[in-house]
Length: 195
Image (tube, rainbow, N blue to C red):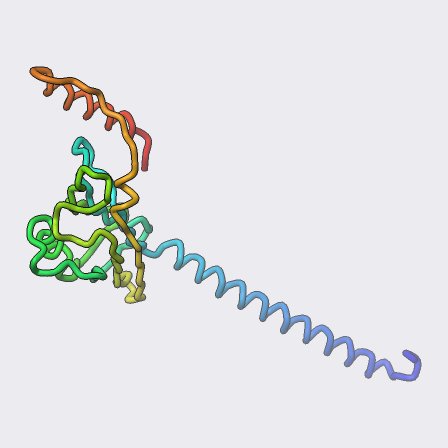
């Protein structure tokens, strides 16, 4: 069958096959470059994270910890709570409303903001003594320096901390200051090497 075609036709056929292969390789290269660019943008983006953590040296106290765990700068960070922390919250709730009520202009990579959130009741119910929600969603809307917009949202609850266990040294009476010093040293020792 190959003999039925002229050398020019065979040459044209293989030229066409080569052109198709070249176009296919170019398409694969373009798709790869787009994926690499997207991956690079994802790795260099800011990521605002939130958690509830026990306050060091204050059993029962809980902090709201907000941190930029990404490698980029977060700009114009707007924070919402659902349910909202109402104007009647008072105490720690009013301080949190003041901290996050307006947009935060910049949160640098690894920057951490810590606010007291609640003191848990001693009955392990997870109920706070303050008038703040026991379970809530915190959402951050922000952008990077190039204007790309992001949204991160976290569902948090005090119940997970109410049932955690921990140990402390027991020192009573006139040696209470020694106990606080020992607890501080234990906390430092626990956190050495943590990012």
